[in-house]
Image (tube, rainbow, N blue to C red; front, side, top):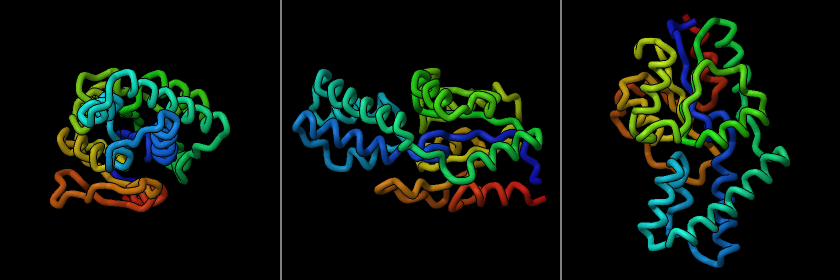
Length: 222
């Protein structure tokens, strides 16, 4: 296989098909509260942190109490979908991560989701033994597109940047890897209703691939 000592994964939109459910949850919250979300908010929420989405709503004139109520509805919808097994694991994820583990490649997770959600997802999908290092959005001072979360995972994995690969589904996450100087591959989330164009040039971007299965085949090459 390729000379890769560690692979760092994003979670939402890359490992789990959550972005669709997040979008539906925002829309449900808006319907319940009988309000209209700012134009483009739902589409741009994908890949952003909790705080960034809250700040976007505040900028649009929503007060703290209304934002909390909308988010409460969104969270209830999300966990309802999770409990009903309506949030699938993306194709080829288990094939890819088991291959990496068998090959002795270190694995990390860098997600903008907070620790409580990550714990629920790990419990539900039995992910606990699949990652050497996990860093959540509430464990860093600056979330993606800042590089801090990837640099923190990298430090804990104790691997060099040029021997590490980041896998991301969003341009926001790609910017975090790029700014950290870590090679990365984008696997765009096909369930996202819209996405910003991929920058060109995009420093440290190795490739854009259709699926985690394509990433697996690429890694197997020598």
